[in-house]
Length: 108
Length: 253
Image (tube, rainbow over all chains, first blue to last red; front, side):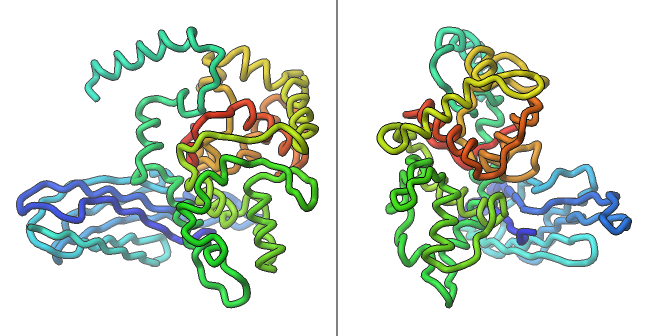
């Protein structure tokens, strides 16, 4: 299976107080499970169940995903530019694995 | 675009379609305006996840072999337009090969690595990446010289009735374009968007995977990935779509 891969689209710079749109596309099969494999075992669910985003240390966005969410999910949200800092994106996968990506927002 | 603007665009499109019935249109022309925008938006078109994977493979440093990038330096320039010339006849072997075939050939003969295998995620990624370098380049595939017999074979395939439903490609993709087949609109059947991200697949797939779906649809023999039959058909489709801009990675339903 292909590796996890995220495309984060947002402006690199914003004015203080400006609303910025952050768009996130990730590669994940979002396997809802329940199928029976060749050995007769039930395949467990394996989806990304949560995306949390922190900006300058503060949580700004959280998205709980369920089995109805498509493979390679796309989500967009807005936040207010307050200070220059890192946006940290963390996805939590069933089974406890986490994937982290960061993006920098420069506030002028 | 405002709702009124969208309605106007849709009305214009509806007016325009009968007038240009004979003009071959790309697959994206049959999508909703929203999906057309999604295809063009690199932040939203999931096909670019595969393009990214391919770009990584392309520039990866492997100790054992020349990397792709060591021969094809500055691929944005050196490989721009390359995908628009496939399928083509390979001079050395005299066989018809498509972009997937050329990448595999490079991998096996020059890099001395085991082939990725048709429809593997790695090969799809690389093909999507190389094809994306030719985005908006008009297709210019040759049907002359050594390619002539392959073109004739592809044309014959396209026009031959096959399968339990006894349908030829041309009966839908020339005669019934714009009409509905189940929930989808029948297109001209050109492959300019492939490898494409199909919503039905939840992933990127090659043109041959799409052709296999068509064969299954008319309950005909599904040929293998990279088979001579599909290669010849791919050549015919590419010549038929001459001048159309490449749009891989496309977004399809």
